[in-house]
Length: 216
Image 1 (cartoon, one colour):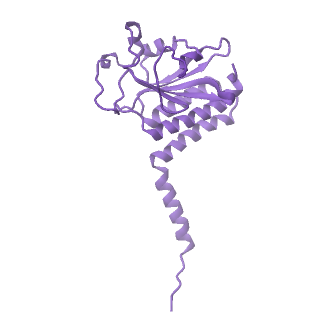
Image 2 (tube, helix red, strand yellow):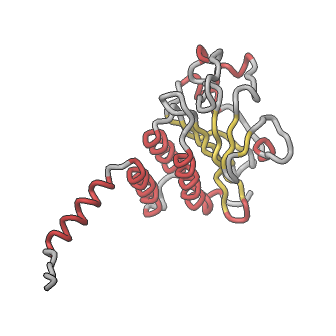
């Protein structure tokens, strides 16, 4: 005769809670915490735009252990694109970066512009030091100029002048801004899942930005 055993209902609750807490401490789950933190800004529509994007830069920088993060936006007054916030840049490099002014054409991958990029996805592209050599005047825009002579030893090495852009795109393919970021503190490129996560951050920012700067 087959014995039918039953599981105590309390053990079911304990297991569900234990499994949840175990997953909650994994990197993929911590990324959700960062996104939830940024989404909470939507509940305070009076929050200044600068504070929203600064919070995003801080979260991305901390969450993915990147050397630096910058976020740029289109200025509704003149339609030009400028860096607005950063996390991890040295003061002098940041002052030089924030003085830059871009047009939408500078980010176009179809028509060659100022910079050469490799397409990773519809939203993300990588800019390599070899394709975009820095002039003397541009050396002051990098965090660690002393490392500019470093050689790339593997295809996962992120050099000092390398960076990745993830575009912030609104309805109707409206290009509102971009998230720019370096390699990790260990000198490698962000892994593919990190890039996917940052693309999700760009989508969250697109929702926050559209009512304020949407459509040029």
